[in-house]
Length: 373
Image 1: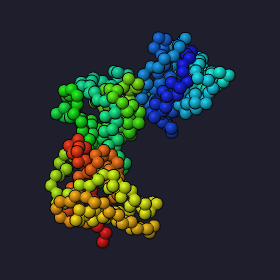
Image 2: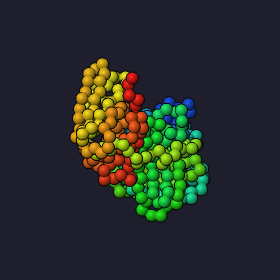
Image 3: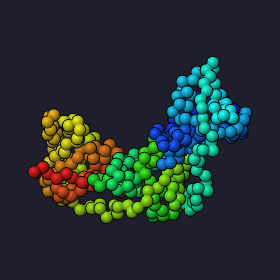
Image 4: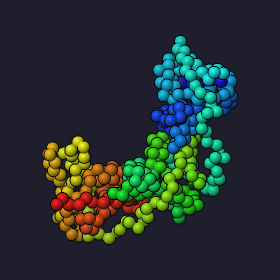
């Protein structure tokens, strides 16, 4: 294989597939990227850690001899980053060595046969019944608005992913970690077949990082055990999680004994000040006292004490309730409306949070903490 390409395009491609490369794999081939060149087509790269598979679209290159090779991702990335010149020449030999040349720089690295690298073929994906399309910026934002509620604890593996469900022409993303629920939805631009799958949080997190913040189109579909996302620049394939997802639609309750409407930024700033006195190894609870069109937020720890207040509009009973402030901070950062609507029932019942202008498409639920004895 012999080709010449732009150094910075190669760098960008390596950064992209590097998100699907294992750093400590039992099989050394999974620490590699697959580099392929085809005359008249260009160069493509693939990373595969058995959980996430990323393949770049072909980028331009002068390909004298086509071929492919697997190269250590970390080493190859560092070589390309540090090599001099704006273009790079890659040559391989029959012993699976790759020579990288640019300007006066010439570096040789040992590679592996491309035949050892696990490539996902269309046949492996299986039959595709329905494809869905959405703007890149919209999907990226929906993931960011929900991903923080994915469970970290492996006790219930199904909750380490997000449910992506298409029903009645609405795409819904839902994440639950037993202490909170994040829900985001959007109407599809064209008639869509009902379908659902639980996609690992890791895959969606990486997807949100590499999706362009633009109106470019993302196409996605589900097979029996895979989720596939495609743009003009890459394809990302993820395994799906098996099991029964929690019936989140039965948990949200619009009944309330206390309702608050408050400025989102003022409330966010108050919670962020409250956590300043948190201990270094744990998040302390904060107390909310709601009465007379005001929310008082207070926290006490060995490091100090905070008492803060935010004016608001209240309806219903006065209430004192405790929460993990991080959960509120995550939600208030995700909501984009100027004001939020928060509904409470009892001191032990979950509260619901929505934007005042976007109540249907984005909503959250947070479980409170037990009052201290």
